[in-house]
Image: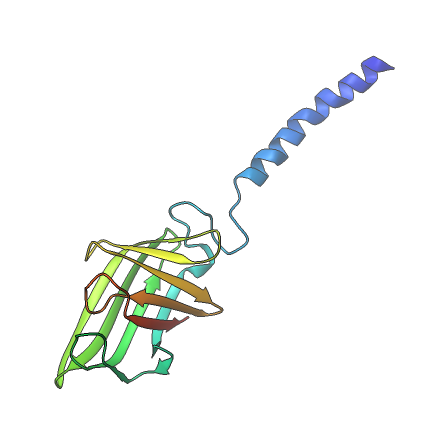
Length: 152
């Protein structure tokens, strides 16, 4: 009888090991893994819909920067953990804008961190339903001074 039980255990062992490995390779429950290249459920194109809880177009005076009228913008987040964004604005009636690109990572708590390849800085963000909010340093003094709200 013992030999029969031992054979059953040896047959079940490879199946148990395979199930363990499949479970260990999965991501988290927030639509992406925790390591690099974790775009997961965030992948897509987003439209700039708000600045600091106000809609677009919106004029803002941030810190020591000139008054700025934000008019348009978009962001693409890819499943491989890369992003690109473009924001259009006017200062003193003259159209202007900026582009940024780099990588992003979703943290265990759902927050986002972005590493800019274009500007060499890092900024944070968060997901709120279909919205992605970026805490951006527009005046380039090392402190986030504007919330850019994008909608998928």
